[in-house]
Image 1 (cartoon, helix red, strand yellow):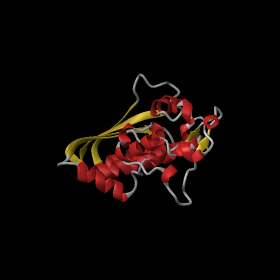
Image 2: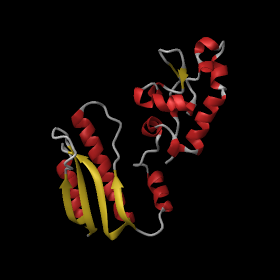
Image 3: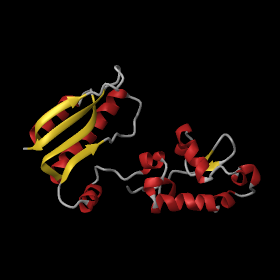
Image 4: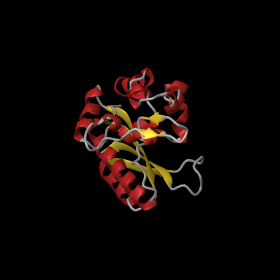
Length: 200
């Protein structure tokens, strides 16, 4: 995976540093989120010497080894970065360049293409469902080029406005299409999986 950090994007799209309520600076406000706290602590971004109260200049915080290591990891070891960095700044799968790079990594055809992708949610369930559905369709079309004739395509989908379109597209590309809802899934969850097999 490649990350294009918005915190290091020195254009109008830059995501500025964030000040936290407990007196620290973080590369962006997305990292000031409870599920990321453990990662931030392990990265040392909240080491006591980096507290604003212990520094006269922001530059001293930004030039610290902890911040330098954080940014080096974004570029050199993105797979080990915070899930929030991947979610917010990961490269867009729908871009032709991204899909081409995926193809370059493959040797021959794949037996399985599996997608668990989802868009950044808006909180409006209908819109989120449609946008995630579009991503599923994009992955399904992409799979045609890299999957073996008897291969499988598996993707998470949500019951919603684009559900029927996804199933119909699957039937155009594959000979067998099934929708599966695991027993472990909550009853009120709209999440299911589409399982497609054998290219047409």
